[in-house]
Length: 84
Image (cartoon, rainbow, N blue to C red; front, top):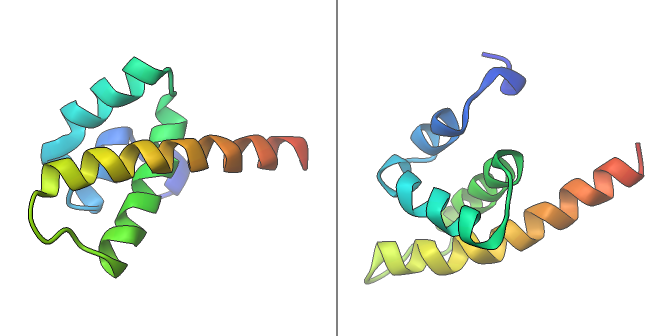
């Protein structure tokens, strides 16, 4: 499947965070992020999960890391747009 054809749900399913999609949507909406930024952020969350998985509360870990990665995702996407 072409990456451009993947939905937000697809990204969360493939990274095993589908159960936290409603939380992620709420976080992103509260601080004004787009679905494209969310897609980029969940990939970054998954990378961090592979290196430093949560040891206690997965939901709290996800909330903290997802917010952090949303900021990074916006920066990366803005950088790509200005260099294209």
